[in-house]
Length: 370
Image (tube, rainbow, N blue to C red; front, side, top):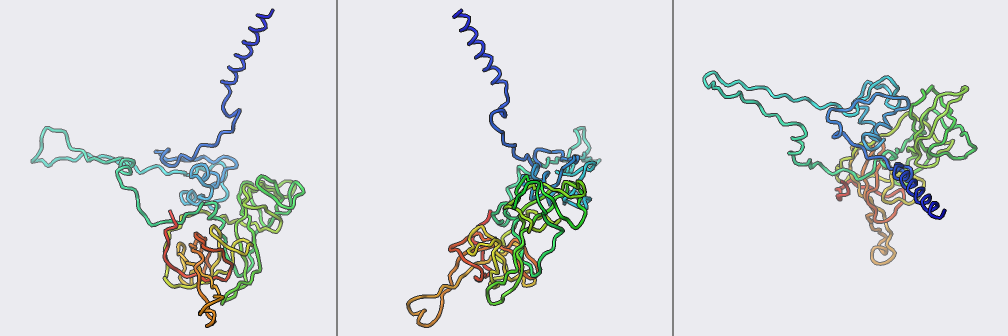
């Protein structure tokens, strides 16, 4: 009897071990999704047949590594009138097929005819040319994540008007986050599956400085995907949220996309003033966005670099006796968005925290790029 029990225990242990080895690893630990393969994995190109629920935003995340690069897909599929709404039955070009190259026989001149085989023009494959070519050494670009870039926002003189707002949620919440299903109060019909931007609007803000301006700050706070109507009411699901969304936020059809920013010093000596920061915090530092009171009409362009200066009153010594003050450099910012009157800049370096009202002077980049 004792021997039989021992054999039974051994048999059960071996059985459990065998089943354990047959189980997939995902049964114990959630596997992280593989990184996007990129165009190199599809030498013949890639055409994606659209399925229910697909968006360029999702396809960009899957194939290009970031949902905020959706504009690249739209540029390859300009037949789409609304880039934020695609539907089953269409085919989206993700990676275009490469250009075909052919080798043509070269006939020799009649006088030099011989019995040898005709010469063939050697044409290298695109991947062979790419491997032989030296890596491109272009100008430096701003070192910023796509998910940060799309939140840059803008400064506006007039309060922006969207197409609606969140009217409530399925649960009695004051704020809503990613994954929540919410009721939408919209001023126009939106098909199920379309993506919508959710924007935080602050203001009116009266800015400090020599040229005070009253205006509004607007920046992206999240993305909602419409679920269509049920019993006459429009629903949506929050696909992503950078911060908690609420009923005061504005819904719009615009969704920002990411584009690399090439650094450019700009017109040397051009002066501007920091009007406000993107967020409500009074002190600004590296990683924050600020708004300048100069725009395209003054010659500001995306990629321009501005050095930021504050004025520090001297409390002792000769300068204080003369009633003068010293200008102190507090940081450096790169312009990422421009309108005719204003521009948005990303602070790439801060020596000291500072508040709105400091001066900005166009100058040389300090190599903060990639």
